[in-house]
Every structure is written in structure tokens, then in C-alpha cells.
Image 1: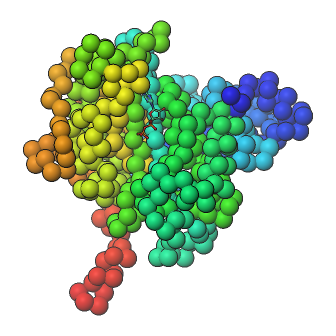
Image 2: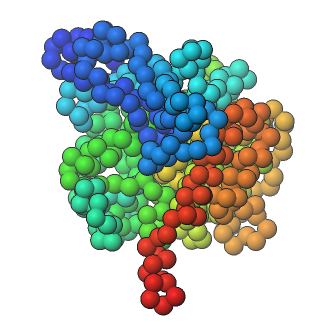
Length: 454
Ligand code: ADP
């Protein structure tokens, strides 16, 4: 597959006039790519070693506010720098931007030279390393759903009342409607392929204007890297065509939401599927049962990592394919955890709780930490839930609000052991900030409802 390149290959491409720009990017708390655009000559001369960014990039919100209450940085601490250290194994072409390559960075403390503990990439790396120490490669795929609109982001600046989804009807698996979307989706598939991202397919989804893109499963760090680059690619290619996309979990209460289901499996370090035991029920090994038991036991505690905004919780509604219950079931889309590929090497557990707004590093780290805790404590898997879990009154609920999920995150002994207190406190603050802002801001809905009649 084309795509990833060595520094020498970048040099050759620069000398041949093929690449002149290198995007030097670090994923932030929201899973956005933040960084600088380097001239390739400067990147080759010294930028590939390191560059710097303001440390508020891991303490800000969507609006780039200097949010109070973080231990990592503040006005009192002077908002200093982090070192951005390119991970050259991620250097790749960006075929959808002319003459451009991209590299992802780790964020490093520029005094101690250690990775910044609260950096999403560092948080996931730590859990992946933990799995490896236990003898497993943690594999995952993060399916990504989104909506495509006819208008550009610029055209929507004056208001989103007249958003026009690219299709007029539910286009789930539709090949005719998705033919109309090929200027975007074909460019996306081919662009990702050309960037060394193993794209499997795209499809229409179960709402007007909704699409899904699937990337082949890989070890979790690579999967999260693929995810953030795929989001960026989707926005950039849509923008180049005068359209826009959204990864909001729920952009309209009358429409379905967008998810990012996380398919997971553990493999031995010599490449055997450790979740598979062909003699057992559904082919599920004892290891897989413990892993799933861990995720069920800690589902509430990791929900803020799968559903990070107040808006994320509006997706969890009955009868719209988003789950409301943290239970497991074989090939059942009403359950929070669905077992897929039973009896085969493709056996995996799909967590359906996450929205398309999740940060894939944090989501994968939380899921993996919970699964590994299940293995370490030899947890027993509860009986399978069968049938419609929406209507199962006694089944374990997914937290209904970010407020509840933030409390569970803060109190999680499991996550404090896996991530460290500094990380849990930091992301609890991030969740609470979202709640404080939502509590403070007066919305269109309130004005419409109350201005005249209230
Ligand atoms: P769906 O019907 O849910 O869309 P797909 O067949 O498209 O299911 O697969 C979803 C994702 O699962 C794909 O990205 C695929 O690469 C991934 N996948 C397949 N096998 C495994 C596995 N063993 N572990 C983790 N992910 C896997």
C-alpha cells in the first residue's frame, strides 16, 4: 500500500518537487489535529526533530478558551510550551492536499523530556504497552459515521436553520443515493488509501445525508491515528467540494445520531486470535469473557471517554440503533456491547456506546483499561441479554447525562490505577467544563419556547 514514507523518501519527494509542505500535528483533548504547516525544507533540516506548541492545547475547549481549573497549566503557571516530537513512523502523504505530507507528534515536557501524561496519545500508548506486557496486541477498528450537508461551513456561519442533508431519505446501504455522493466519498476512500490508511469501504447510513467509513482494524494506537486523520480528511475533502460534514453525536433531535462503534479483539504477540476458542459458546475464549466482563463492570466509568459532551447523551435514545443499556449480546444492535464474528477468527466485541464525537485515543484507552482490569481480576461474564434491550427494565443503564458520567469517571478506582490521578482529574475537569458552559449558555430552543409565551 502506498502512503507512509521514511524521512529519506520525503527528502526524495521534496527534491523531485512532489512535496513542499509538511503538517506537523498533535491530537488534542477533543481529538483534533493541532499544529503547524512546515516548509518541507525546514522540516527536513530540523523540524523533524522537534518543534513547540503552547501547553494550553491540552487545556482548552472547542472555542480555544483558557479554561480555569487544570493542574497542568494556567495563567498562574504562565502557559508555557510543550515539545512536539514527530513520530516518524506516522509520516505519510496527504494526497487530497497538493504537495503535502503529515506527521503526528507526541507531546513531551520540554524540561523532563518525558511524554506529557495527559496527552491522549500518551494515555493510549500506556494501555497498549500494558496489554503487550500481558502478552497481547490490542486490536481495534473505530467505525465512523457522519452527516454530509450541501452547504459549506462558511455558508452555515450565519445559522444552521436551513441545513440541507445531501440526500432526501434514509440511505442505509443504498447504492444509488451513494453514487450521488461519490465526488466526496470516492475522493475520501482513495485519499486515505494514498495516505497509507487501509480503508475497507464506505456506505450510506440509516438517515438522510448520513454516511459511514470503515478502516481495517489495526493495533489500537494506529487505529486512533487513522481515525483522527480520517476525520480531518473528510472535512477537508468536503470543504474542497463546497460541502460540509459533521461528526456531532446528534446534530438534530429529529434525526438519528452518529456513532463511532469500537470493534476490539486481543491477539497473541505471535498473531493468534486470543478471543477465539472454537470449543466454547460462540467461540468465545475465557479471556474474551473476562475482557467483556471488565468492560461491563466499568461501563459507566468509561462513558465520559466515549461520550464527552452534553450533546453526546442526546444520541442515546430508544429505537434509533444507539444503545441505552450496557449489556452484551450476540449480533444484537440494541445492546451496548455486541459480539460479532462468532466462531471465526473475526470474533470481536463491538462497543456501540461511543458517538462520532469521541476522541479515539481516550475511547480506546478507556475500553482497553476496563477490559484488561477484567482479565487481571478474572471477572466472570454475566449471562447474555437476548431480545430488545431497550425494553429491558432491569438491564444496566448507560449514564444518561455527562454530569453522571463525569462523577463516575472521577470516582473510578480502575481508571485511577490504569491512567493515574493526574489524567483522571484532568479529563473530569474537561467534562465538568462542558457542563458548566451548557448550564450557563442560553440556547435558541429556550428563546423560541419562552420569549413570547413564557
Ligand atoms: P459492521 O456490519 O458492524 O459495519 P464490518 O464487517 O464492516 O461490520 O466490520 C466492522 C469493523 O470491524 C471493520 O473495520 C473491521 O476491520 C473490524 N474488524 C474485523 N475483524 C476484527 C477483529 N478481529 N478485531 C477488531 N476489529 C475487527
